Length: 414
Image (tube, rainbow, N blue to C red; front, side, top):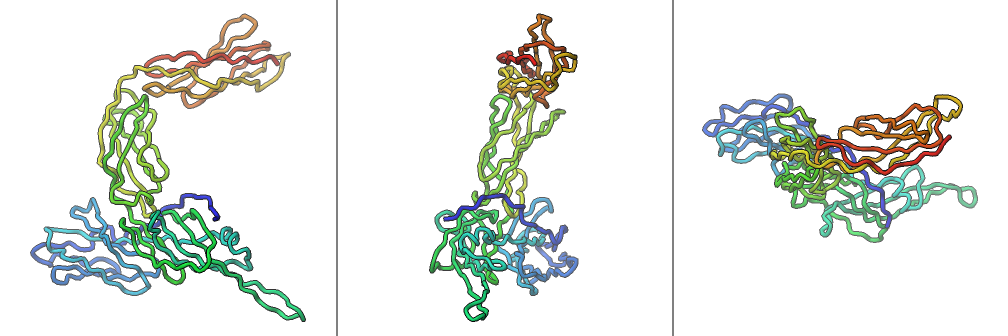
């Protein structure tokens, strides 16, 4: 088996053809139907609405419905483009009082093998390796999987000076993730070609022109969001809503302060995890916490906000760790010696660290020198006269006060 390093690809392009409503339907009369702009035509048919539009050969066309032009709901079905005029029927549109409709074009992700992986399986590449792909959804793992047939034609001279070509072929069973990245590729003989299809979450694979294409819908807003404060962080959890968990590429957690000048805090959680942390919470501040899920198709709406108020600052930071110091300039005979101190941030307590105090003491008995630095840096520089030995300590501060002083680091002379 050949395993390929995974990477997240950009989300598929989702183009809104009409940002306005395609049609406005009144439950008692179709006189309110408005003709849409461009080549898209909306025509009432009994209690149904027919949307006619030109397609291309790669895209997937899906209708969306809204009652207020603010929140849009995907129809679970759609139409695969093939370069011809298509008609999509939205049934029983007159059953509701009023509805708005628009059309999305979803650009598929092509499922392929990287040429380097194809070469590792085939063992030859003469001007490139051609791929024929047929894919579907694996019944066990749920991931896109399929068969890739590889071939390349190599030419050369034979006995007697004649020229001949040799075609090298191989077949691989491949598993992709929901970003179209190869998880594994296994050489195989006499494999059965999958026939595409959709899974229970509306993800779609279709095979056309010896290629396999993946469509992943935009997910609905996640639900079940909760946030618990631990020190200066929110531990956030959520539940994906009507989306394949394997298809979630990332989730963005946002904590927005309410009636406070504090900063908006965000964290991006990579992959399909359903928990994450938001750090640097200000004390006694109310935050609205939301979660957005992103798939290859795009990003969901934000979840319904929940409000959480942080506690007062009562826990000072712990002592900084890994304190060290070096000489940046070495001039024992002059006054240009520069000591540079560094350290690692400690546990912040239950409010963010806002400053550090760096304390250095020389072996000449002249006393201590101090410097206060902001939280954005973990380094401090001192311009000093020559002294053979120095002791360096660091202390952190937050809204609860100063924490303990670190262990001393001893720097020898020049």
